[in-house]
Every structure is written in C-alpha cells, then in structure tokens.
Image 1 (cartoon, rainbow, N blue to C red):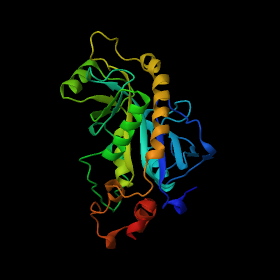
Image 2 (cartoon, one colour; image 1 turned 180 degrees about the vertical axis):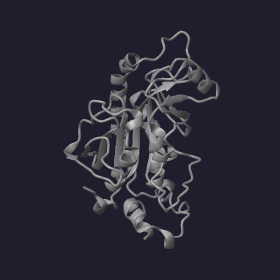
Image 3 (cartoon, helix red, strand yellow; image 1 turned 45 degrees about the vertical axis):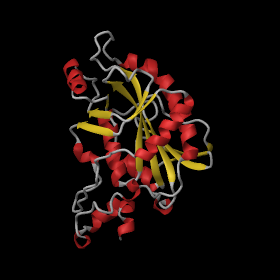
Length: 293
C-alpha cells in the first residue's frame, strides 16, 4: 500500500541499526506494511506518537537482524519514509572507530562520507530517462546534528559532532591493511550502511543525520583484539539505550515546517527537460516529483 495522501505532513523517521529494532513509549502504535515502486522496505514500519509528533520507525536489518548490509533495499526504505510524510530522518548505526579519540560507547555525528562501496546503482532514485544531480558537498544536516548533539549532552553521552564515515560493503569486517589505510587517510569511523541512506534522503528532500554508535576500534589498534561480532554485541545493548534516550530528547525539539535547505534539494538538481520525462519513470518516482508536475 502506498501513502501518497499524507505527503504534506512533516513527520519524523528513525531507522534503527544493530541492536535497535524497536522504540518503546509510542502512543497509539500501529504497524504498517508499506509497498513502494522499489519493493518492500526492510520490515513493517511502526507508527506512533512521541511528544505530540508522529514518528515512524524502521529496523534497517529487519527484526531479528535478518538482512545483510549489501541486501538492504535502501530505496524502498527511504521512499517508504517519504511517502509517509517524513521530512526529518535520523539513522542510528553501529560503527567501528578509526581514531583513538572515538572510544566504544561514544557517539559520532558524521558530517562527511567516503564511498568504498560497489553497488552505487542502488544509491539513487533517478535514471531511466530522468537525470538529477543533487548537491552533496555537505551530506548530513548541520542543524539536525546540532539538535542531536544537544540532546546527547543532556544524557551525559560523549558526543563528537562531525567526522568522516567511510562506508564499506561488508559483511566481513576490515582487513588490518584496509583498517590502517582508512585510518591514515584521516577517516574517523567505518560502517556498512549509511552512505546510501544519506544520498537517497537528499534526493527525497529529507533532512538526514546519523547517530553513529561506536562499538569497537576496527582492527588497527594493536592493544585491542580485532573486531568480532561478539565484541560488537558487547556494546550494542548500552548503545541502543543511549540512542533511545537521545531520541526522546530530540523529537520535541524538531521543527514542524520543512523549510531547511535539504527540503528543496531538487530545485536545482533536475537536468532532464520535463518534455522528455518518460511517463513510467514519472509514475515510479511518484511523490519525489509531484511538486514539479
């Protein structure tokens, strides 16, 4: 089922990562099965009310953690959120640290990404006759990061506002050579999922930010054991509780009017003359193009 009818609402989306598969405290919770032109999202989307705002929550890997990073249907996930009226989206993600100042259980709010992925065709909604090139010099929303940082400080969490997230394919963790190279290039954290979400949110005119929850030092640090799933899971429960506390403080502070620069990202991005837009592609892009028709 598509939800085009509520596109003008200014709702809040949360995509949960490792360890964050649900959000407690929703008033009037409702589970939604949302279909999109790109297929189904990772799982049912939970709708609820928090502090008077409508919030939609989606577990990125599905409940029970069933979906590999390379198997995530990012286009379906982001399109589903946009079709539900989401204009602010917070992505919560477990990451490895590449620098000593980012310790396990710290959070980083990256302001940059570096792409080491191989499936870039899944990082855009466009193509098939309609070309768009969104500005992406600043891939996350600075005002949204500032609000998250304030919420994090209120919880007593060590928060680093800014940093570069290098996105690898996975599912295996880095080799030591890869980890050392990424660290020496000055990257700060490493993960497997967030770059596609940031790119697609920009095309969907959604203000986006990542709460990156540090679980390990990847495998570059000699005095630490190389990262394993068991190592990661040792910090996941603590990090999930931290994320929930931050989100509870953040949601009441988010504005209602979608008037940030990200909310008009397509204004100067569409390259193809409307006279040449294929009807089938227009239909598929749906809500993303509706204000231009």
